[in-house]
Length: 93
Image 1 (tube, rainbow, N blue to C red):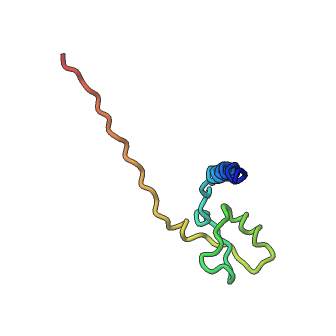
Image 2 (tube, one colour):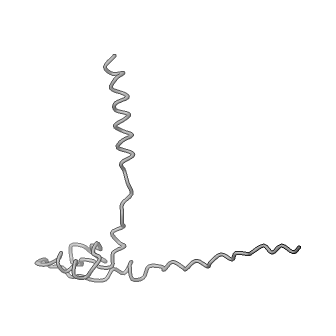
Image 3 (cartoon, one colour):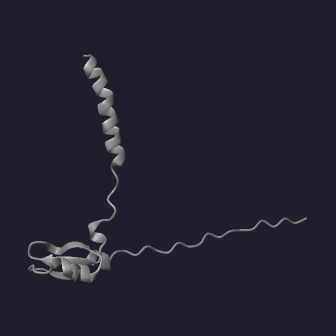
């Protein structure tokens, strides 16, 4: 019983440390402009390449081709924010 009481706080600390180390993925694979395309990947393919040269180097020797990612090409562009108007207070004496 005593051993169980000392094990629970240790397990709780380990669980908290694991949860604290979880970070969101740095980038969605569909954010990249180039895709390895072929019969095994479907459409649009495996879109994980930032440059055409990187895609070409990765598919070398395989029955694949590099193509542009349609999700990247036709994604909705963020609208530029309108600057907020700032009004100066004018004191009339």
